[in-house]
Image 1: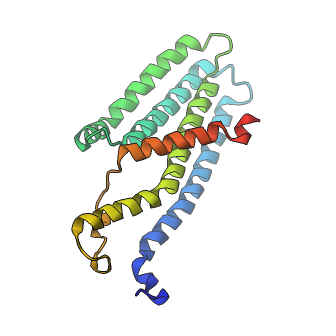
Image 2 (image 1 turned 135 degrees about the vertical axis):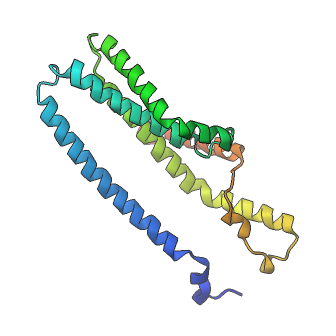
Image 3 (image 1 turned 120 degrees about the horizontal axis):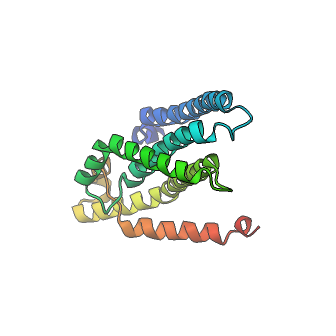
Length: 204
């Protein structure tokens, strides 16, 4: 039997500390960089942003779109069960080209629509950024919710296939990269979407 005093042997404390420090550092870096970029943008744009909309607004908006698209594509496709590692590596190798195409295409579109009444580059960038942020939060929450149950299920399957007694079985299989069954992820995503849609806060 495993005693409480031996629980520390089964917890990877060094990696847990790295993750915790990484979380706080990412928040600090994001806050500082966000403040600096907004400060510089405010100096360039000033309070009369309509004058610089076509010149600076298009460049700023296109650069933002390129970064957001690269984030969505690379992060969204990472670990996607229907894409092979070869295809993913090919996409990563062409990340610069994807960003360049996104920048050029969005710049042309901004130049076309910037004169249209009611269109705002900054509003479009804010909407796209909000979508990327929502995707990141939703995927992170989904992993937090279903990660432990799925890992438990995989552990049970691996142990069952090994034929070894539970007391003698080592969970070495969990140390390797695992491709989760797509049905689990799709089902979890549907449950999350329905929960958000029918929540009381959404109804308000």
